[in-house]
Amino acid sequence: MNTNYDESHEMRHWKTFVVQLEQQMMDGNLPDVSLHEIIPDAVKLSSPLLLQAECFARITKGNYQKAQDLLALSVKAYAMQGNAHEMRTAIAMMALLYIRMGEVHESALLIDFLQQEERRSPDTCSGFVLWAIARRPNTEANEIQYASALENDHYYLKAAEKFSKEATPIWFVNLMMDRWIYDSHSIKGGNWDYWVLRLRQLSAMYPVCKQAYDVIANLRFDQSEQMHLPYRYRFIARELLHPGSGLPSPELAYDLEVQLFGVRAEINLALHDKGEEARVQLLRKAELLCYAIGSPASWRWLASLRQVVGLGATGETGETVRETKQSATMLNEWKPIIYQGLPEAHSTPKADKPNIKLMDRIRFIVGRQERDAKWKRRKSKELFVYLLMQEGFRASRQTLTAEVFGEGEEAKLTNQLYVAMHELRQTLRENGLDNVLYARGGIVGLEEQRIGSVDLNEYLAFGDTGDSLWTDEELQATSYYRKAAGIYGVVGAEFKEATWLKKVRSELLERQTRMLKRLAYHCLAAGDAEEAEQWLKEWIAISPAQEEAYQDLLRLLKSSGRISDAVDWYRRLEKVCAAEQNRKPLDETRMLIQE
Image 1 (cartoon, one colour):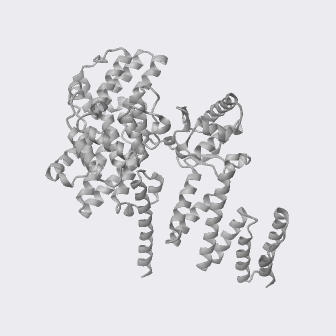
Image 2: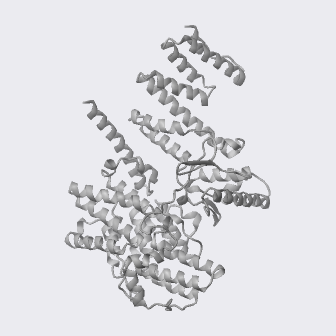
Image 3: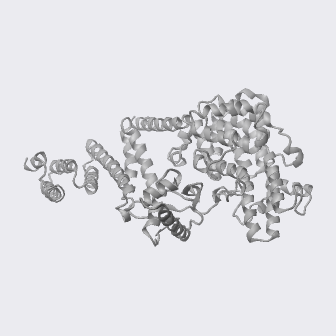
């Protein structure tokens, strides 16, 4: 009886949490992957929308192995449930994952199945099914013919219609960006005018739609204004509109389109630092990527690369088109060339991302090793902490300079920022984070894809989850409060005088005090005096002048018959009141000792 109650009680908690995340999607935002990780798989399967969001987020971030495992679980579970619609959607997302990675054979098998299902029952197929069919790689096509024809464009159009009818714009806007990347030349005019206009209409409500519209309709990319788009789309849009702007994040080393559009920056570097052989090898890599991708945009990009290298728009690198196509169809032959110098090409990179601790002191954790960084100047350390506390680990140069370096002559402040960034780069390099700090387009930031967890973000996530559950699911809320309480510490303890940090510390202290108070009261109500005492003492430790905490502790000690301990804690309160507030404890507190 009690077991059934506990199970239903816990399920109600998860349903409440899932609804909250689904509402984020209704608002046009993909929930953070870290929030998905705490949800049991059985609960995820009850929300196809949330499951799709997690898989899509992992695919766009390059976390292919986890996405593949989750999709495989979904296909099996939905098949057992007889839910053909969601099973086909999961298969379609897996096909899109394989297309991103260049797994031509695997994606073809899945798309063959999806096309059969679509012909048999078109009305029951989701937009993802149509999207996957539209992106089928055509490695047998002649590049000139394929660049001038969109064989599967009607599938893209049908997918746009499907996604536009859903309550969230997330899938529609991502499809539109993918279609623009597939062939930006043909997305203006004809049937696409209507969907571009629809994107503009949605821009009034959803920032991510406005940013996508700026790229697609206005061919305008501003790094500081594109933060709502997934990183892969931001990178590709930047390269298509401003070729050779920079190398992609290593996290997307196995995303074929990202790697193709990143070749221009590699060639630019080779033009200055390496010989002709290196440039030809990069062009060879681009040719193989093109045959695996098979999109009109990829062939145009290849032609532009040939011009840059100096081989002409139709020049070859030493092999005939037929030979290149034959090698492209043999996955084991061409893939190692594309991913030269990288580990296993069919999986997510194995290198551990450093986790970062900010509470109490800055530490880097790689695997099981924890180490303190060596800092030459306090400002480089403060800059690092400031960036890690901003959304997306980035901030405008103007805001950052004002917050971290204060007021002064612009030239002097700019020089201080430059010196701090230079030293921060060196420190990060020494701790396994080379080329993580960037400054472009008026934005200074850290490559989010390269950093693991940050304890402050985990603390806030656990605390927010507990707060959302406290009113209706108090027991579940306390489990998150316990996790958060174990993480808490002073942020930026090394530079306590930093003005911008004072408000942050105050807010964190208030948050921690509220959680400890709730934990103590919950344990008191549950009759767990030992744990309640622990939380009350921790409350006093971080807020030694809060007399309310002493009052609750005195009541608890007296009720347990520990009069001597209660008197000792009262004497401690007397000293704190005298030293910090020049007063005596309140009469009501003194009465607790005299009773």
